[in-house]
Structure formats: structure tokens, C-alpha cells
Length: 434
Image (cartoon, rainbow, N blue to C red):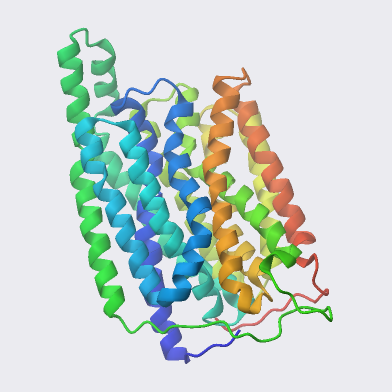
């Protein structure tokens, strides 16, 4: 990769990108609170319907990731990021008519538009932070970004939960026992209106950050058309000719699905165990605290002590252990194991992304777009989980196991062999620079 900035510029860029990771982390992890909120406010009958919250949000990545790569070619990284923030603001404002009409479909449209803006933003920021310094220490820099993301994620369900799900159990009881349709409608309308002010504030902040970003001196970086890790005589003509990238897309798909299950489905899992909404609305925060601890570990260990691929292997093994722990336990112990999956998941994105784009050269932007498409895993796995337990008659515990275990098994494969498929074997590099 051709780096066109000095160390001082790199630190400035890391600071700016860190703020962006905080912003989109805050928006992303609101979904864990929105799932029970919209299920109650829009009177959804099943968890399958409720999980369309994550489906609408994450499927936007699948449809918008490749168009985002072409947009970035026209706008450059900085302007593309600002555009992504602006699109997210539009999605947030759609929540106003959605709440007024108490329309679940309008909420889903707003979430899809938010996801579209995030697809553009993530297609830009992830390769940017990977190539702003040595590729061998990319996982360390992404871990720093992950801390910004997860601190925001820890705060967002607490803040939104306190605002929109205050006295949630009592309200749920009132709505359930209301016999007068007019009274019930009034209760539901009041509940739905609680989401308007928070999302107006979010939209204003997003527009402000977009404006400040467009005026900033964030250095732009381009990938040089230099030789890649190709060992063949014939030069590659497409990103699709890199097997380690394609396997990485599937790996990221499964990882994001597992991450969303641990972060957003933990509340539904708790409700299935008979826990009250006043408790389960904060469960997402537990998972994100565990992820935050994992990122801190990554900063101090990658690449000085362990390589990116070794960190991914350890994470996958932990994921397998904690998933079995969820299946074999119940009550708060099961919730603890789900939260601990946050620790297992923390270093997966920081490791998978740089391993998958390594050696792509001029195909880095489109390769990154393919990886961003893999975020659609967050749309599929929760739906599979809820379908198994609500429609197929599979137990809650078994449904969780069936969804999660194959994910971590494949991630383990990618960490051991998959990331090297199609490339000449190289020893793990451990460089102390950040």
C-alpha cells in the first residue's frame, strides 16, 4: 500500500476516524433497544417480526456496499464519509412520521436508509484505517476504533432505554390489560412518540459531524496500482480472483451474524427465559462491555505478542466454548455466557478485515465493498434463530446453538487456513509499530 501521509497526519486521521466509529456505533447499537420497543409500540405478534429491525438495517449493507465503492471513487474517502453521515441523518428523520403513524414499515424504511448511509461510511473507514499504517498492525488500529464504537454502543441502549422504555414492564401490563380501544391507542401513541426527540437529536448531530468532517484536513489516501501478493504469472483482473477475499466475505458474514445475535438478540433470549422487559432492555450493554474488554486486550497484544490470525483463532475457540455454555446453562448464567460472546467477538472484525484485503492492491476498494456486503449476516442469523424457536418448534436453547456453533467453526477454519487460500504461505509478521 502506498501511504501518502506522515506520522502526525496518521494520528490526526486516527482521531477523526475514531469519532466516526463512535457516531455509527451509537446508531448501530440502538437496535438492541428498538427491537423490544417496536415490538410493544407497533404491537408485533412474534419475535420474527421484531427481528426485521436488524434485517432492514443490515440488508442495506448488502445492496449498497458495491455502489458505495463506486461513489467513493468519485468523492474520495473524506467526502464519501460526510455523505454517508448525511444519509444516516435522513434515515433518523424518517422516524418522526413513523412514530406519528405508529407504522412499523416506516420504521423499517428509516432503518434501511440509516444502514445505507452506514454502508457508505463503513466502506470508506475500514480500508482507510487499515491502510493508514502498516497492514500487520491494522488489527491494533481497528481495535482502537472498536473501543470508540463499543463505548458508544454501551451508552446508546442505556440512554435510549431510559428514554423510550422507562417503566416498560408497567406500560406493557397497562397495554395488555386495556379493554377500551381508545385508551389502548392513546397508550401506544404516547409510547411511540417517545422515540421522536432522541432521533431528531441524532439527525442534528449527524449533520453537524458531516459538515465538520467535510471542512477537516483529513488526509486522503489512494491505493497504488503496485504488485500484490500474487504469485502467478498472469496478473489478476478482478477482486473475485482472490480466494482468500471471498472466503473472508463469508467469514465476515457469519461473524456479524454472531455479533448481532450476542448483542441484539440477548434481550429476546432473556424474555424467552421469562425475564422482565425492565431488565432485558439493558442486556445489550453487558455484551458491549465484554467487547470493550476484548478490544483493550487487542491493543496491547496485536501484533507485539500475537498475530492477527492467531487472535482470530483464539477468539473463535472462545466463541465455541461460550456458545456451548449458553446451551448447557439457564437463567442469568446463560445470559452471562451470551454477554461473554462479546469478548470472543471483539477481535474478529479487526482481524478478518485486514487478513481479507491483504495483497489486493488496486482492488482494495471493491474488495472492501464485498466485505461490507458480508455485514448482511446481521440480517439473516437473528431471523433464522427466531424462526427456529417460534415456527419450527425448536427449543430456545437449541435454536441459539444451531445458529451460533457453525459460525465459530467456520471462523476458526478461516483463521487457520482460509486466509491463506490462493496466497503463498508466509510466516506471521509481528511488527511493533501502530
